[in-house]
Image 1: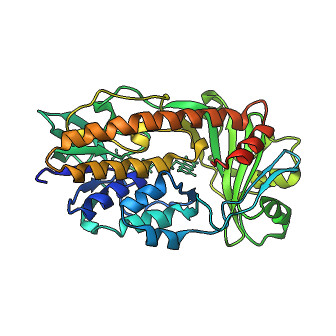
Image 2 (image 1 turned 90 degrees about the horizontal axis):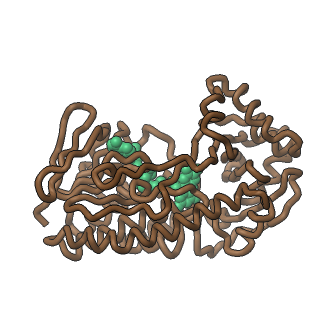
Length: 378
Ligand SMILES: Cc1cc2nc3c(=O)[nH]c(=O)nc-3n(C[C@H](O)[C@H](O)[C@H](O)COP(=O)(O)OP(=O)(O)OC[C@H]3O[C@@H](n4cnc5c(N)ncnc54)[C@H](O)[C@@H]3O)c2cc1C
């Protein structure tokens, strides 16, 4: 292959694509806005599904390395109501088809699979301009630019590559997350930590919820979820963390004290994350020399637990198409998009439906049913 492949973004998707291409002798160049691999903590657990994330890991030839990272039994799920009454207690499965791994460890595994020189850190894309035929000019905020023969936008929710293909942008889903956590070993939080069980606790009611995971060291980390307007989000001031958390806790008046403690005693910086999603069925007419993978292609709310899994699958399939016909990049992109767009439409629909079920009028029974049936996860 003579053409230059440029990937924007070293998220899970961009890394997987670089890995698959490198395995077949194609060294892409990846441009990433962040200054280094360690500039941001990549926390949280991801469950990696057999039909998507694990398929990608096979294509990347990383099966053995992946299974060394699996944290067995951590896929346990407990659903409770606002009094802390247990409605569903699903034990962790040592041989789960959706094993859980630490996001940071997964990222490190992918990064170790190709040479460091392929990543250019601290290169934030400002804009992308189509040139003749398949070429694109990528302008960076530092004033430099490069020209690509094949450009892949793996730059997440607010992709700078996406506007070349479509004007559609993600929209606020109506639900926001606020990060929370409890330190290990504090006797005042024993009842809260105990309630989590072995894996993830979901305490839900219409319009709100507390979702926390128990870490191996006994600490807890997770999110408060609230259905709130953008005006409400704009008005909450988290510059004083305690005051901000007190406002959030007011939304949980009447809840059991050991549930409210996850908010009132939280030791996490209360970062507020409005959850956005692309409209279900986002698509674009094919354009030579450029495509999207992962969240850049199809941002979803996390309520089907599929975003990272799909980013990996997109990357592996695109990588497979490119390496199968290296002299027909355009054919590879057409084949990739023909499979990816309908697949992501189906999952986006499921994700939007799950979001409604999570905090809709039938919560928490609806959440118990969701996990009781199929074990779909946030
Ligand atoms: C709270 C929460 C929980 C989730 N839980 C799960 C789960 O359990 N399972 C699951 O499968 N998914 C989950 N997801 C979704 C998952 O995190 C995403 O779908 C996944 O990270 C997308 O990967 P990506 O590589 O497409 O994009 P990203 O991970 O967003 O990576 C994009 C990269 O591009 C870089 N970038 C952005 N803009 C630029 C620019 N202008 N120039 C250069 N670089 C740029 C960014 O710095 C970043 O490194 C969750 C999401 C959230 C918010």
